[in-house]
Amino acid sequence: MTRIHQRLVLVAWLLLAVVAQGSRVAIFLDERESADLNSFGSYISHLQARGHHLAIFNQASSNFTLAKYGVRQYDNVVILAPSLKTLGTNSLQQDALLSFVEQGGNVLVAGSMQVSTMLRQFAAALGVQFDKKGTVVMDHVRHVGDKTDIYHSHLTSRQWTQFPLVVGRPSKPIFFNGVGMSVDPSNVLALTVLAAEPTSYSASPTKRPIDRASSNFGTNVSLVAAIQARNNARVVFSGSVDLFKDAYYSSSYGNGDFVEAVTKWTFGERGVLRVTNVRH
Image 1 (tube, rainbow, N blue to C red):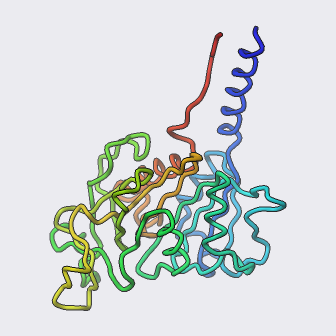
Image 2 (image 1 turned 90 degrees about the vertical axis):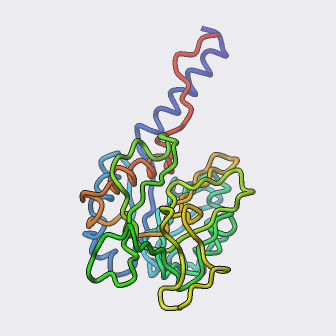
Image 3 (image 1 turned 90 degrees about the horizontal axis):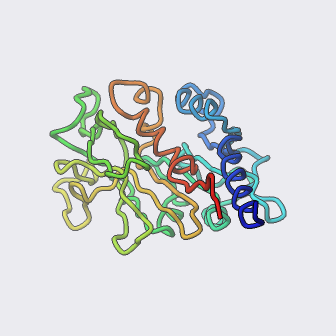
């Protein structure tokens, strides 16, 4: 076995070992849900079943740090708290998240109508714009039909990307309730993972008539967006935190399989080059 062959085999084993051992995942919930994980129980259980090592935090956590002495303490950060203003009490904000990504860390962010300024700024720095505060994605044709949904913001979409490495092979519509986004078309590193249906639009539900100049329409509305940085770090933004909740995760909708596939891609469990059986 040549020295080059030995090194390539070693790289292959290291790549496979990282996947097999799972990763270190920091999950941020709001303060109420961090004490009661039932809202996201299925999602969290699936992460644990895949061997990931989870740590739960909220905005009041004093023991959270992204890095120590320049070394990342986590491989992945999942934010399921749309109103999050800081990462714990250490006042870590979007600059800390950007540095984390620059160091190769992966981030998944779930938003809502209440998405915080900090998370908006983090998304904007990566070429993804959450729609204006107070707006929501609505669809008067493909809404779910919930009697409490007076704005028809509980909707479904089948407009997923055709890249199975990112979304798997979904067959059921995806339930969505939240804020829309726009992906900078000049950003070659960004991708709309799930778009709204042609009959959907993003606007303020309480303002009439609709301001077409400031509204977003049809498949131009991004519901889930992804970025793969030049250092291969991955970031995903969802406009709906409900996408991850038990109420829709294990329902007749396709949220469970869709979210699992997207999370695997975000964490580098899918679409990663693995070197095996290399000969020279």
